[in-house]
Image (cartoon, rainbow, N blue to C red; front, side, top):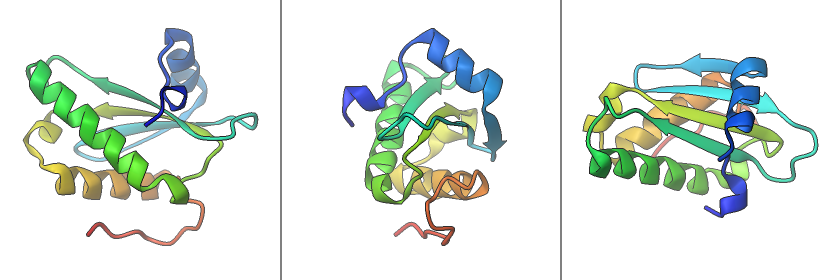
Length: 120
């Protein structure tokens, strides 16, 4: 995922937290904020130290980025997304993470066509 598609600044995170809408399941919380001036969506990731060591946290972040890369065409492009991983995500493999993220993105109405995507 290109760096311009990531949310890095604290101010950007705070805007999404304050003005955005949140949805959650057991593994992830997703905040979404519609921004009309965006050409491509941006994502911000938050994985707490409570979840595991650096290796575990980085693996979760890589998996989340890969899922967003695979779902790139189907997502609403004008949104900022912040994904917060919860503790159960530490014990999941890539396909479980993908299935869980698709579930919570469906709840958030983050797909352009509201067809239910299934993970392979």
